[in-house]
Every structure is written in structure tokens, then in C-alpha cells.
Image (cartoon, helix red, strand yellow):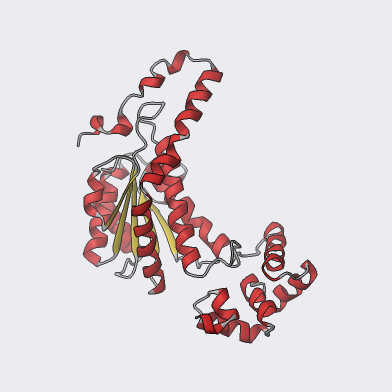
Length: 300
């Protein structure tokens, strides 16, 4: 499909006179268009669920989640990846984001980088892509050569592949095991896919990482028990998480976290199962990191 024929490149009839609108009218129409994004994502939930299941299975086998993309799409993948360690306690290499043009492209556009499919293969070789990994290719247009090249290389290696696009019948969909197509339609500013398409991609990335982390033991109830208490705010949050999870007061929670070497999840198991830090740590190892199974091994 030619670029001009894509819905993300089509002019939005509601905003043809965008340049003459009052600020009030401009913001109102922008807000109205933005409200359509969650509905478009909702229509793609079955495919998003399939992708989450693929990622969960890969993580259980020691595989990584690797986002690849160019421009805004690439930046959104990087953003989601870098938030996983502080939120879920993942190792820095468990979730990666690769952007066309390399790390410097996050802050400043590297023109032409997205047009090189071989560059993505080289970038994936650079992070030692293996068959147990999952590669998620993100492209609003659904036709970015860098993303296609990366998905094709991942398939050659035997890694699972997921595509995320904002057009139906996208070219990248044919290059992935699971194709997520979120039909966001024309932007208020013609072709500016950092708007609705970018919002949709952010929502999808949020779902992929958060749901897969929940399913692999990174959450207890709705609490991020693997949070890394690396600053004053997160230290306070970790104490409140342990308190909420166990019913203990914050002083008791803080003492348990200290005994657990700063690991909130271990402190939760210590308090709920009345264990010392060593046994709580072993229970978590045997349960694959799931708090409920660690507290009551009979449920594992």
C-alpha cells in the first residue's frame, strides 16, 4: 500500500481549517479525536492478548522482550523498556528497546535510519538475539523498512515476533507471528503519527509489558512488589506496598525490608508466612517469584 493511501496519512475532514480555529476549538477537537484511541485499542484486545501470552511463555523460558522501531515508535518502545527495571525489578537486559539510528536517535532524529532494513538485523545481532526472545516491531505506518528487517531477522533466528501498527492490513503484519493493528484513523495534523497513533502505541506497549510482568510474578494483588527502592520516593513506596500487602504498620514493614536486603517482595513473604529472609527467598525461587505460591506452597 502506498504511503498516501494509509489512514494515518489521510487528511482529517474535521480539522481541515485547523489553522483558523480558536485555541478553544482546536483543543476541543484534539481531545475529541484522542478519545477515540482507547476504543481503537479495545478492538485489538484479542491480538494483544495473544502477544502477551507469547511474551509470558518467552519470559518463563528465560527469553527477553525486545522492542524495535523508528522515530516516535522507536522512542515509545525504549520508554517502555527503561521503565521496567524500576517498576518490576527486572534486570536491565530483560526488556530492551532498539531505535533506528541508535541511542542518539532518541533525542535527535537520525534521518534515513528507518529506511535501512539491514540496520535492524545488525542491531539485533548486537544484543545477541536468540530463539527464546520476543521481538515487538512498532511502526505507525505499518511499513517501516527498519522494522520489517528486524522482524525478518528475528524469524530467521527463531524468535517469536509481534507487530504493532496503526493501519489495517499493514505490511509488517505479514512479517510477524502476532499482528496487532490499531486503526486510529487520520490525525488532526495530517500525517503526524506522534499524536493518536503514538498514544495508541503507548497504550499497547503498556499492556504488553505490564500484563506479562503480572503473569510472571512481578505483582501481588495490584501492588508492584518488585519495585526497586532506589530513591526516597521509592523507599517510601516500598514500605507502603509491604504494609498494604501484609497489614503490618510501616515501621514493621521498613524493618522487614531492611532484613530482606531492600527487597519488598521478600519482606512481604517474610511477614505473611512468618519466615526469615533466607527461607522467604528460597520460597520465592521455588514459586518462580509468585508471592501467593511462596506464602502457600500448596497452591503452586
